[in-house]
Length: 424
Image (tube, rainbow, N blue to C red; front, side):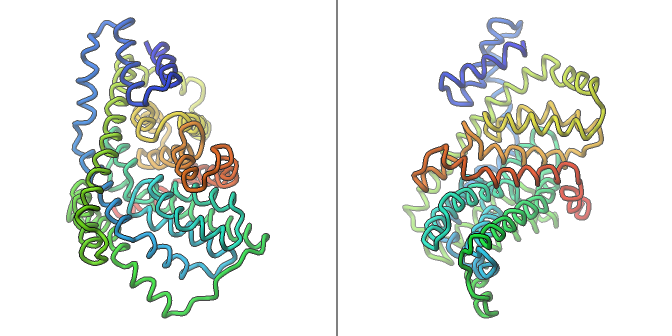
C-alpha cells in the first residue's frame, strides 16, 4: 500500500488540494481500493492525532506571540538589537538577524518572525543603501530562527509524536539557534564591509540601558517560560497559558497598545492559525498511522541498516531526505510523517532522540526557504512585492550557510546536547 499511498498524495497536491486534505484523502483512497480496513477508521485516526495533551500548548503560544506582536514589541526589540551590534560593519543587517533571534524566542514561528521584523527592517535597510536582494534574503533566512530558538511549536509536535521531553527539546534548540544566528551575522558583517555599507556609532552605556529598559517586558517572556519549565514550576503546556496571560498584561496594561477590538482580532487569528495546524496534524497523523500499520518503519530500518551502519552516512542520507521533504511539506506534516520513521533508525546508530529532533527542525527550517511551499518566501514576497524567483535567488547564499550550520549540528552533538545534559 505504501507504494501507492505516496504517489496518490503527491498527485492530489499537484491538483491543488490543501496539504491536510491531500494527506487524509490519500489514506482514504488507499484503504478503499487496496486495503482490508474500513476507510471509516481515517477520521478516527485523525481525531486521535489531535487528541494529544502536548498539542494544547500550540494555540496558547500562537496567541502569546500575536499579543506581543500587536503590543508593539517588534520596534523595541529592533532598537535593542541596534544598540547592541549596530556599530559593527553592516550594523543594520546584523541587528536584523539579532532582532529575529529575539522575536523568535517569543513567537516560535518562522513566518511571524519575518513579518514582524521584515516589515520594519527591510525598508530601513534599503533606505540606508543596502542591496534590496541582500536585505530580504538575510531577513527571510534569519526568520527561520523563530522555530529553532525555544519555545518552538515544531519541537512540541516532534515531542508529541516521538515521546521526547519537550523541556529537553527546548533546551536543545538554544545553542543551534545561536550558532546559525552567529553565522548569519558574520556573513552580514563581511558582505557589508566589502560593500562599505554604513554602521552606527559605538553606543553609550546609557543608550544600551535605555534600549534594555524599553524591551525588558518583552524579553521577560522567554525568561519566565523557560525558567518556569526548567525549575519545575510548570509544564510546557502550562507555560503556554502563562505566556498568554503575560502577553496580554504587557500589551494591554504596560504598553497600552491592545484595545478590546484588537484583542478579539488576536483571538480570531489565533483560532484560524491553530485550526490550520491541527487540521494538518490530523491529516498527517492518519498518514503516519497507515505507514506504521504496514510495517514501513521496520522495513525502512532493515533496508537502511542493510546498506550501511555508519552513523555519518545514515545521517547524511536522512538530511538529504528531510531537505527534499521540506520543499513539498510544511514542518508539522513532515515531522509527523518522517520522525516516527527515521528516529528509531537514528537511535540504533547512536543518535539521541533530542539531538535528532533538532536536526529534523533545522532541516525543515531550510524548507521554509525553498519552493514550492517555502512559507518565508511568500511572506517576503508580500513585504517586497518581488517575485518568488527573486526572493529565492536572494536567499541562496544564506541557505548555503544554513546547510553548513546543519552539518555542524548533525555531526557535533555538543550543540544540541550540552544544555539538556546540563539542565536535566
